[in-house]
Length: 122
View 1 (cartoon, rainbow, N blue to C red):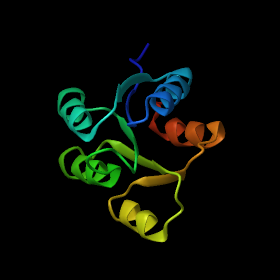
View 2 (cartoon, rainbow, N blue to C red):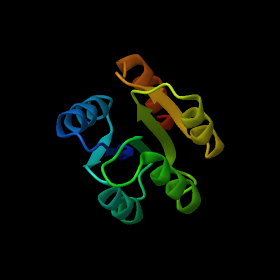
View 3 (cartoon, helix red, strand yellow):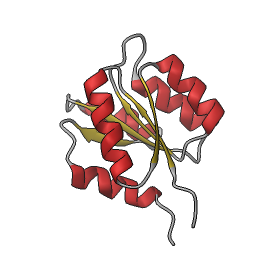
View 4 (tube, rainbow, N blue to C red):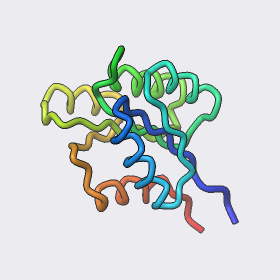
């Protein structure tokens, strides 16, 4: 049986981070959840997750900076950015780095569709 794929969830709001991590885990993935850019960048380096899911707005930096870092250093990591703001400039910036863009509130079918792509075929 293959090891579950690893997903790094980054969200500075505790309740939203826990809820998103629970949804991802329910889809059969191993989840590491971080609350900040610094925690997430360290986790990227240590764990090399298969998927990075981050909120755009983090306390000290933004999630787009994090996905750009991941695109540069870990290009095989699938990247997903979440936001409650449907902003065309955010969409364009995400697209430039090959990052999926999803709006909050996140719907389970959307999340499952994204994660299905990351799940290995058995």
